[in-house]
Length: 576
View 1: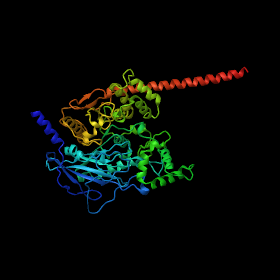
View 2: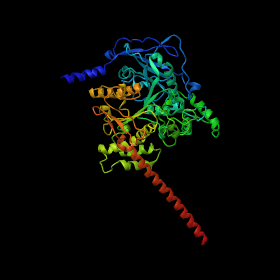
View 3: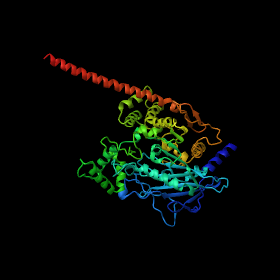
């Protein structure tokens, strides 16, 4: 009886909704651009949180400023209310659920949302740590609204941290480039940098500590966090980082010429006719001018549907960060070597790629994805599948499908996360590695080959919002949400997920580790494990060696065969 009452009490206390009274406004704060008021969330015993929604940090990147770096927002006179999300940057939104906030699109979309505790506790006098979150969406979709507001306020901000979420340009608007000053590229990353500058300049008016800023993001947001960690332009703007289920490896960055070629093909599809295509300079000027005149909704639509139009010649259309001479200069190896020396918290979900599979033809789909995400390297993809997948198992068995999906998870996510953790561990600051394993089946998850923690499974436990269905937590959900959010909040506060008085000891990755330990996060089973992903990452070294040896053998055989053929032909001519 007592334990049941405690369970119900825990859920009600943890998941209590804010009061449904008429909108209550915060006291005004004076930002660098003008006076602002937000709305108040009242969670009873958990406290009150001020939510300042849609504060502009950048001007509208439209007209001649489309495809250019962002500019700081204009100041405003008087006092403005910020109680709703600002418009989202353009992307193709499909199948929006009724429980999600409606989306307004506009090129004037560069805004932040600030969630800050309204603390009446006289004991809390110190400035609060700040958590800045970058949303995911494969760099082509999403906005700050996709992670919600009330859940962030309730789960995170009530733990005496300030949380900032932000919009940035996605897709064509965020990554179109000609490789020169006409469209330099990496607009999305420059947006994030400007948002971080805004946070630094305005931290104190919200009660925050500008010397204790944590940057974190999930999926493409995790990749962006890694990119910002490698950029020489962002040093000092944040002091710790937590890329979740995402990092920037070979698949996450490309040359400007690759995107320019795709954009040129897309523009031609939309009616662009270059005057003199042999002149790259002239074509770039005309191309950018043409793309600036296309309606933003049309650009978003065609960018999202581009795979059907085969713009790049191989059926794929990828808009991602590019190497440049400023934000991401040099090679990937040099960028990784120059990563900021800050504390790092990073990890994955147990079956990341499960989210991309249906129940049918799992093996065939895995081969296809493995080949695509190794840049068409069918030999590497097949060797990996042969190495990890037991083909004696029935194809419809859960174990067989798990083995297939883990290979794809490794290629898209796990290998680069592992590499980031090991490389960062060589610096002086600590690195904490995790795998999120908790999963609760729901009607929306029945379409997958099996049930397990997949890409994005962790988000609802940090933000209290599920895009696919209404999130109605039970006691296990609450326990996991409390664990996960406490780890992230502790990391924001202390650069250590253990906090100051934790019984659970999460040890950092050793700088001498060849098989790093990690925290397995699951309900009633969260514990430190000795080897990340059961040693799979080390086995990839063996696979790469096999493939390289096979390629060397093939090249040598081809060379010897050609030499033999040439020698035979020469000898034959001598005796004619």
